[in-house]
Image (cartoon, rainbow, N blue to C red; front, side, top):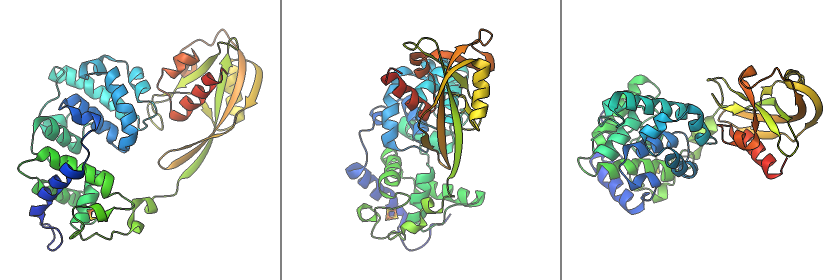
Length: 357
Ligand code: SF4
């Protein structure tokens, strides 16, 4: 692709970005403290569709729990999902786990060094593979995630690439812009600029190194994807919160969700269209002793607002319902909180434990 004439000189793009990154970029993120490809891989996967300040709360506990590829590969998927719990987009955790097993089986537990080989690992796309290859192995590879597409699009006056051909063109531009040296600072600079300055809704052009000649210096917020996003749907569900056992040591019934849809593979309070469905399941689990409705919880997903109405029931369990039946099991609260749980369910159960409920 020939970068458009006028606007930013492509030859000056990398040196200006590198100088800006050194002076104003991010230098103290925990995954920047080493060139360990495993840590970079985990961070890159966590950062997909997730803000840095959120990832900061999850990264260190995750790598403490699974310090390397082998430990991650040896873990049960449940343990991985439990550690990922609350970070969302759980397919990433499943892929990371499957990818770690692949690295152990095929590459002896060491991540390969080339971008092409990295791309064969489950869950690693071209841009993530390029980031690992640059940061850990000094390979001259271009990244082009959504943030970088936005930065290059604005800086060079290009439309958002909507077709495969347009995406190929943008990859070509990203490759043409690569400097011969300072690759890591350049790549980090693209990430930092996209995340902290050239933001989707309100780019902070006044503090951008390209403010003087960027064709989108005055990019109007009206063009933000947030404005164009389809309205969020709202969905109401009843959560069956079935309890059994003594009041001071209750057990709760959780079911494992299917491997697709929202919260794939996580453990959840069973959800139903209405109270009748929830009570029908309660009837299968045991004899109903008491029931009460708890205040609704609203949980926002990207395109969906979930209104969850917990229905707490106290049951005398039926002996024929054993763990494993109905894809579920009875768990003590502490056991339940060690499982992979959707964020709103974890919040409910954590509050119940704090209240001694
Ligand atoms: S000047 Fe503004 S629109 Fe252009 S790259 Fe910088 S922040 Fe983005």
